[in-house]
Image 1: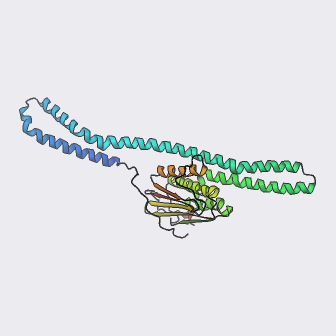
Image 2: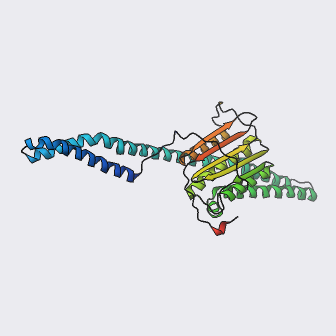
Image 3: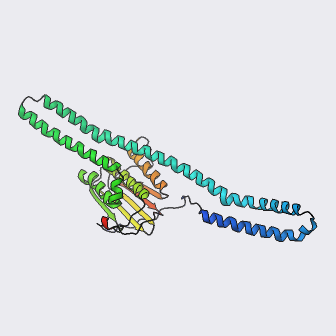
Length: 312
């Protein structure tokens, strides 16, 4: 593998971050200590005028509540409300991603397997209508080729749905297999470049989402771009992962509406998956200038334990 070209930095202003529970707990303790200390120092001067200790306790509680309420609103309630809203949004994105995955499977079944099965049915009918035995044998040979292609498509779709191979083999080998099956066999020069060391693995959820992102990009390149070459690059620097998917195909006008077009749905799925990973995505394209999809995931938490069974 060759080291990939450096990725440009992507904007990170829109990322949602939340304070850690321990940080919130310590902040609350410090606030309570400071506020209570200030109240006790202030009340020391005039508490002697109150003969009833109950009045002193009530005044202390009232001042503490009035002072801490706005502070706790900003320290606890607002971040918690943002976290709930963020979780709801992620659940909605996950549902949309599942629907997009079902739509992609339906397209694969209709465009690939459905057409091949139709050709197989027509081929069997032509054998039945063959005028001679030699003609029947010739048509049977064509039917065998169609059946083999249908079997290959079925295996490719099954591998695309499985996450077991991804967990066993790893992200980069699975991406290489994906590009070989979808691009190289279609006559597209495909390159997969990665500087992720052998044995370094990401979490299963991150690897699964990254594979689906790459799968969407490669599918768009295969079906819609009419490209002659494509490249997938993965770069890991600490806990920051950069991904790019580029092709020299037809491209598209980014400003033009793409409702209802499969490629547009695929790019929407990429954006949703990147959002679920807490990353940023940049998609640049122009008619006749190809398409470039660049993704930056700031925290992927790689595992640096070498797995001898997966050395490449």
